[in-house]
Length: 310
Image (cartoon, rainbow, N blue to C red; front, side):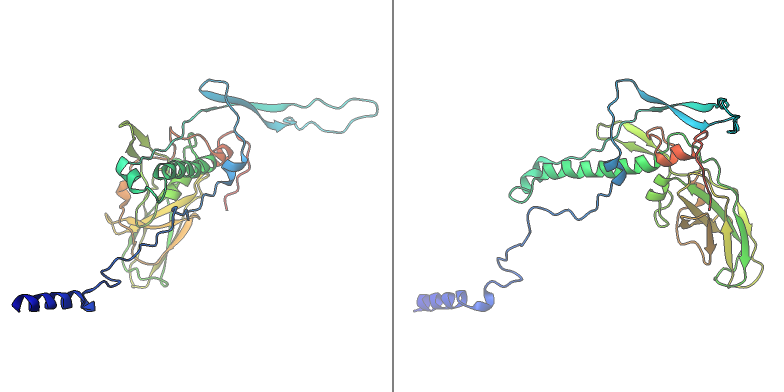
């Protein structure tokens, strides 16, 4: 009888629905749509529209540019039956070294196995790498800088306003002009991108630069009283700069507080960033790994381009 009772109790326990499967603990399907979807933008209008011309060997491309016509400003007036005055043109020889572009990615055997029946991990790696390279190429076409040195950022012009802010102590202000790469890769929270050494997939290294001009000299905004002060700051615009990084604070505590796309800013409170101005030690405005993009070609000395600094 004891054996029979034990058996009946076991059957009863097995049939107790309170110990069965639930959504939280049971066999629930994982609804994962295959294949993986891309939701990142790949906006490359320049790369898509500018034709590629194959080289005939060599290490650089060469061309001539007409930089001016009728350089002597010969008058166009002419007497009856005569030919006009002879004009001259100005020519310049141009050259640009070829540069290699490339990105690397990888898929481990285990990752490939794990993606089976869901997606092709190797194909995704190739596709993502190609699209990433297209985006980088677009940035290079527009803002690559191999030869235009932005020099030293001008000393800021500062003025204290007794209202509009929360400043109560004298502030030192610095400005650093940023290249297009610097503008893309810098932020107040992360700091201005500075020259660094990158380890490549084959173990080799490259020096990555081309982010910013040399920092300005110090400008001091003297605050003698009050706790609601603000500061206006501006610098002479730098041809080729895509943005400007502003550092301010008390002596020894000047940290990044703003990045602007114009050559002025208004300082109302203590800088929110953490990167000290001492991190900007050299001029890092050009890169030996870049070719000159459209902006650099426009502002290059002798280009003949018209530049208006707003």
